[in-house]
Amino acid sequence: DAKTTQPTSMDCAEGRAANLPCNHSTISGNEYVYWYRQIHSQGPQYIIHGLKNNETNEMASLIITEDRKSSTLILPHATLRDTAVYYCIGLGFNKFYFGSGTKLNVKP
Amino acid sequence: DVKVTQSSRYLVKRTGEKVFLECVQDMDHENMFWYRQDPGLGLRLIYFSYDVKMKEKGDIPEGYSVSREKKERFSLILESASTNQTSMYLCASRGRTNTEAFFGQGTRLTVV
Image 1 (cartoon, helix red, strand yellow):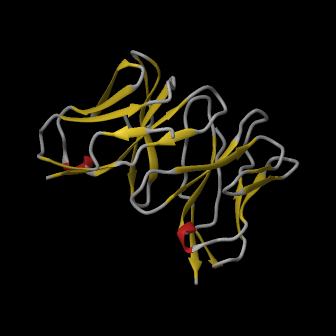
Image 2: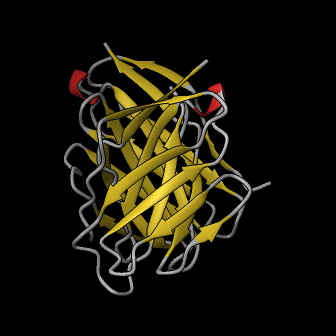
Image 3: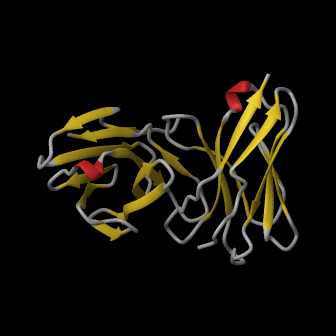
């Protein structure tokens, strides 16, 4: 399972893009990168996942480097409701391992 | 809308009690997971199940057991609750490989 490294916290102004980085240098070739977020006292919420191509959905975009050693989650127009802990995780065969994540603070 | 439902949002139990935490999913998923979440320690995997009656230990199975008699239901059992099992417990389910997992809303268990 890939070990992931994320900054402990980040700030973002409301309405601006939030770019959350993740290093996953040990990721294997067939291992997807998943992003989740957790708002205080709730269960983690799925955001997006990808293997090697960039992905976009209604919530966010995911940019994966060509060597797959890092990725960036982009929230294009952050709102106060996006304040949460964001987890980048590498997926094992049947297990999800969560690290400490990045606390994103969206400020007015 | 996909659903993973945990039986209780908040629970208070006494030391030594046998505690059952129930989780039900309506997505016909093969894989189900139990995590606990503690400040500073992140989410830690307790047990997971990849099929009915099948289970595997995660990283911290001591003091816990699980039951999966039906595909949609995965139960976590604290055989004799202790104060160090006070935590947020999260259930998740997932279908085939390389699909996302869905989490329940969590059960905050306090053992007194």
